[in-house]
Length: 391
Image 1 (cartoon, rainbow, N blue to C red):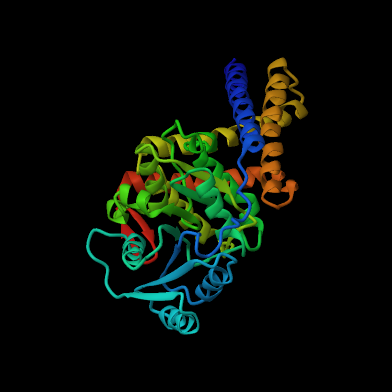
Image 2 (spheres, rainbow, N blue to C red; image 1 turned 120 degrees about the vertical axis):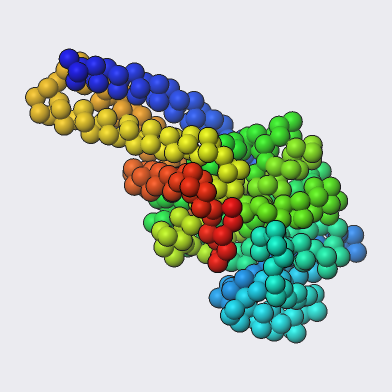
């Protein structure tokens, strides 16, 4: 009797989850079908184009800063300046920045030797960099990101044509391996469940989301948002800034930019986990309730897989009850509703659709990252990032 109650309870649970998955898949397909595309390059002359101040903060990025800076300086958009901000590096980052500046007059170098109390390292570096910016348009880029030659030009045209205050692009990867195909998208989808792309790009909604890999905005919007000083304690300053802009009624686009802006792949699962713990910690506003919901999202999908395995084992073992057949069918449909759309998402980012079958592994690892973040919130240990602890 107890077993029968369990099976029928699992059937009801699976039916509810399947219905929710169908709703989410409809939303996903709608998002992919209606997503905006970045505009073509602008045809303005150097005299008529607005000046773009590109800012790259860097701490111990000697292996990335030259390539990142080169991708900016090779841009087909002529009217720009590049501000490189060294944030207390212990390697040769500052030395390499100075060498870049010696070869190109468009480059300025700022060296930060100490961090004021009450700031994160990145927000302080960005704030100091903007003080030297002369452009009407600000473009913030991470030191491990590289951009396409026409990206600045296309982004300026998109920003002005659509009368935007901010434009941000979600990056792709220079190379895609197992972590980038099998795990990273699950974590990104987990975050996007709180910030649907349709709502982010809907000017009537107050939902904001952005990526620090590529974040362009007008200087007026930057000042109206309160400058980086207003977000000096935020560990996910890009998301916090985008939310503030939308709350103030400003216009934002957040688009996929996988072929246009790319970042280095993760070197290990530990590095990927550290990145996403920080993102969940700050992006979910240190909310225990939201983090619990995130954990349940992943665990619920893993439960479907467990029900599928359970029903197969029980039926194969000579217990082909009606409830088990229904449970097996519902959980199988549920897993299809995970595997197939996930494969499409990976393929959209130029990975293989066969990674859809890696979904159970990705979900399990994502659940571990989410649970680790929840534990940090409950124990108030704070987040460890680049040698600092933020609470």
